[in-house]
Image (cartoon, rainbow, N blue to C red; front, side, top):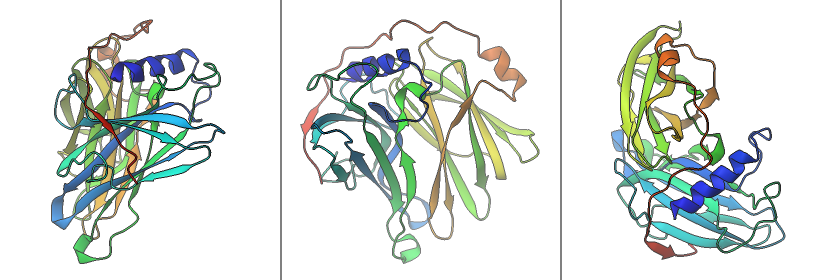
Length: 300
């Protein structure tokens, strides 16, 4: 199943990235949850899909559970979005979705090219995908709207040619920060993170192993106020592509903000420039054999 997602991602990459963050037909939602957290928080995620077309659009959603190699079967939901419909999937890891209480992970969301033929590479079955993650009753209050987690275009992820910057991270008496990486790479990826203080000094450096088609999230290991995390690949297959992100949470209220990765070839780390060798993009990605669980539902 994920091979279809990768094929669509490659087609988009071949069509070029000049359009930037315009609509596309394959996305990564870097983090979703249905799990208790620190200090009485209880995290849940909603997903919204909007179909801008005059025709019904079939969609595939696949969950990449955290901290495991997802080369084998992955939970899969197939659904259809009606013309111009806004489809709201409340609590996507809850009982009416993937039924994965106590879980976190990333989501792949893409147009199902086995159920529809898209007109051309220049006119793919593009759509909108948007998520929010929020906590129930923080400090026994009424909850809050939550952090916005827009779908990240799959063809614009971090590969060997760029670094990802996550600005305005804080882990102190007022805030805590989690950093994470989602991967659509059919192999292990070592991602290095450099934590900078506001003056640009690297105050902490860590390596994290991301499993094949995996998702890993961790608490920022060094205290900082208003710093930046720089992420880059140091060991991986040539076709590696990953999606770093961060989330900063208010200790008092449970309010959270999602920090999307800003990708650029400009690097602040001398070590990174020697580790990230230039490469030629492969013509296609190698993909493993999948026989994922098929969960056909139209959760609302």
